[in-house]
Length: 320
Figure 1 (cartoon, helix red, strand yellow):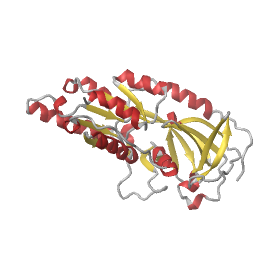
Figure 2 (cartoon, one colour):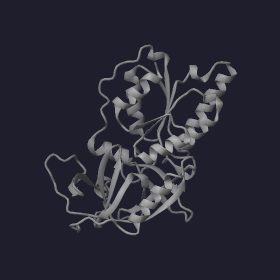
Figure 3 (cartoon, one colour):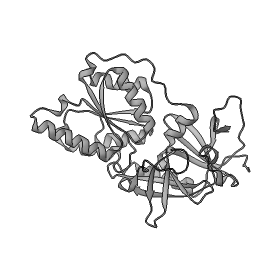
Figure 4 (cartoon, rainbow, N blue to C red):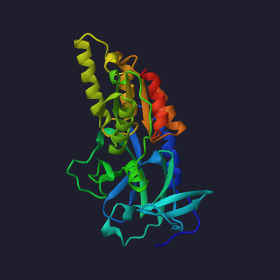
């Protein structure tokens, strides 16, 4: 494997990343996102949300250290910071790509973690509508042992596999431990509706709410959440009781297939049936730009994934 000794941000991709991030802050409520396309040395194209990529550099020398988690290639020193590096080809068990050199590193930042992903190369940044993004079928047996959480199709007919970076993080370093959480008094009378496309996130959120003693309902994406919430609102209207009596908080992810959390929030805030029900955005995209996007569409609270203490403390007064 060939490595460059000094990191260099790619151009024009580096400039394109900055432009895309700046443009994305103006897309709140548009149901669109930017994806960086990259290759792992196979015929398949992969993608990752631009907001999760801090920079693209030439790969550097990776140093192995004792007790590295399985699948982690080692560590590198980048601009004064020591970060772990994963070779995505090996991590996703792409046997037919092992002969290809990974000379490019995506420096990713999400869920308050910085990771380097070794890849064969980057292509370009594209803008897609979340309505064109679909979760893989249940019997999907594609690359990476369920490390792909969405598929989108380009106008050319080419399919892009979007990497579930939260699952990568959990697979490499273990799932987040919720720990001890005090129960809410009369929590069994309260209910949180949450929407998240990540199975890892859904499991962790459900565990936290169970420990808080709070009931919960869930959806796997924004469109499913909107349809289910509208159904609940219709039932409340027909029963002549406020929906607030049934659901006290709506918790949404930012990135979701079919409808993202920004559009979902925008629609909730425009519908009087959901008045007085706070919307909490719970996202691995925790930059100030993302917080500003959430505020622009009416998000009441913004919590970075996954800080169990912070999320529980944000929810507690809303459920008391």
